[in-house]
Image (tube, rainbow over the protein chains, first blue to last red):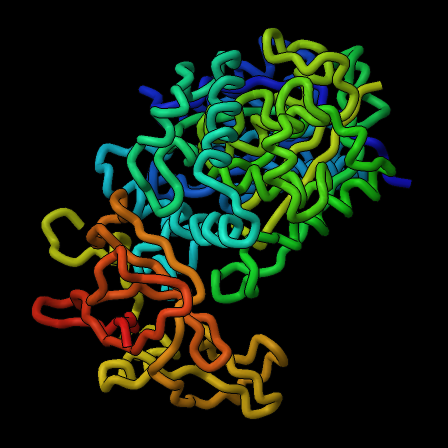
Length: 387
Length: 145
């Protein structure tokens, strides 16, 4: 019988253009998560670090061992790095969950860390292009913004979604981020500022995109038999799902406005948890671009597929609606230090479900969802709940 | 590394050298103006992008075939800035349908405001710098037909 797994601690760095090295960020997040608790630190028997491209941005491999030493832990049962582009952090959490559920470890720290800002600006985009097929896509200059722009064009043509709709999502998440001390952005732009921001890749403008951020985040997962040794308010992993349809744009079918892998990943997670989407109080979804959040409303089951724009316009994805989407500010507001993002989402789930989210608290939150994509055909969903 | 002209790590373009790639024949054909890919002789599946074993049945009995050089634009986006080192804006990225395959490419010889979905396009082989001074590598870009 698999053991239940809980989050028992969380901590993160501020995200943003940080005057800090890759190692500095790891040290900061480790310290924030452990908060000086020696009993928790000594109980940790595993470490998983989600990190995408330290080889390029910090000229560093061998990440988990380095992080363990920097944090001052000596994993006895598991040490690993996960790399799954933008979903690396959530993939790490799911690995740790499986190890604990299977009895191979009891207490595992999962960290996500990324240092994306490097001194030569044109290298940043070149590094990011490593996330798409080098030979057949990146070699034309493809990075994520134009890739997701194809989906935005498809959703606009099929459903009449407008730039104004995408702007509503950006404004919502920037407003949420203003209440988050860890967010990349504190200022909330006006609608005109978003609509007049420069075009990145048509129809996506600058403020429809997540920024290039540095940051790290960490959570500690524990087995149900020991979770209460570390907290009286464990946050339980209720279910999870992951699904891949394809990697290259050539493989994703005719209709890029619909991402079936997300529908199947969320269906897996809901089935594992034995719950329906209607009971989810808040969701940290992967708004790498505003259109990605829009498509997630249907893909995660909050509305019917194809009715995302109506759902948005009705205010159903903000405070007061049926599910608060991205209360921490999402990737658009918080920034997107690739490997750190999924772990930062888990931090938010931990705080929201313990009523510790301050001015951005979703009142009475009992069930939260986190979602990462690492491309339009690749999705991972986690469901969290409190006692 | 410092002081040398070519750095493999920062090369945004593909390996086209047959010593380091088993699909290098794609680039040799492309330099002659032909668009090719690998078709499986066991199950008949045409793989795009070309790869040395079939992604459908995983047989390595694959053979090069010529593809048509004309297609239509399935979707596109125009990137105005922020391209990786080695690329110039604006870039018209497109998914082009060629004989039932969906090929990711860039559209050249076309004002950005002229590109549209359904537009017929034709292969236009362009070049990028090679790995040694004076050498070039061919690219399968497309232009309005």
